[in-house]
Image (cartoon, rainbow, N blue to C red; front, side, top):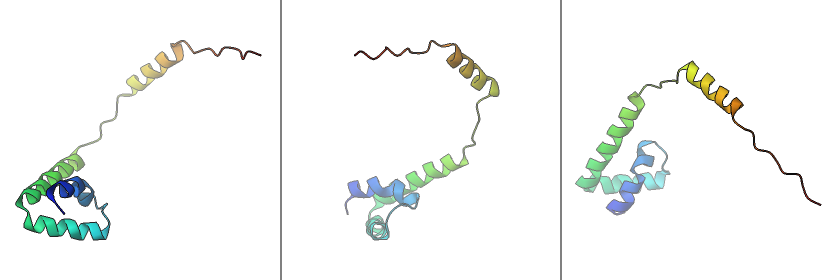
Length: 83
């Protein structure tokens, strides 16, 4: 495995979505490649930070306004089928 192949698989590795044979190949490469070790640390840091983010729901009034606008918007008309 080369660095290009390894970096393409890192996000799947961190997410636990790689098949076991790929995990072994990736881990073998990472164990001998400082650049990919650093890239793995970066990917893990990003994933950790994403997990730390809190979900923020939109305010209720925004949903109501959007639904009102959808209801007031012109509805497309369908032309009658021609014989």
